[in-house]
Amino acid sequence: MGREVAESCVDGVIMEMVSAYCNRFYSSKPELAARRIEAIGFQVGHQLSERYTMERPRFSDHLEAIKFICKDFWSELFKKQIDNLKTNHRGTFVLQDNQFRWLTHISIDASPDNVEASQQDSSSPTSNNAAQFTSMHLYFPCGIIRGALTNLGIPCAVSADISNLPACSFVVRIKA
Image: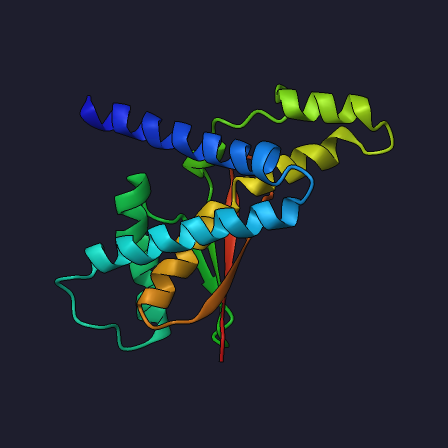
C-alpha cells in the first residue's frame, strides 16, 4: 500500500512541476520551460543512476549501458522493463514503452489548458495544443534518461516521440 501512495505523490509532483513551469514561470516562453524541466530530469537521472550502479562494475560498451537503462533502471522507476529496444548499431537507440506510466493519466480532450487555449486562438487546432501539452510532460523523463547515461559516461541527446497515448518512444543518440 505504501508504494501506491508514493507513486501517486510522484505523479502529482511531476504534473505540478510541468504545470508550474509552463503556466507560471515561463508561460510566454515554452522552450525555456522545456529546458528547465529537462534539466531537473537530468539531475534526477544522474543521481538515481549513481544510486543504482553503486555496487556494479562500469559498463564496457554503450549497448550494455542502454540494456541496463531498459531493464534495471526502468524497472526501479516504473516497476516494468522497456517493452522494445531497437538500434541501428551506429549510436542511435529507440526505447519503446507501450504503457508509459506518466502518460496514462493525461487526457488530451479534458485538459482545461487545452480547451482555454483553443478557445482563445481559433487559428491553432486543439490537437496541436494537446500534442504540445503532452510533449511538455516528456521533457522530464528525457532528462532522466540523459542524466543516467551521462553519469554512466555516455554523453547523448534524448528525444521523445508519441505514437498513440500512452505509448511513447525515447530516441537516444550517442554523441561521438
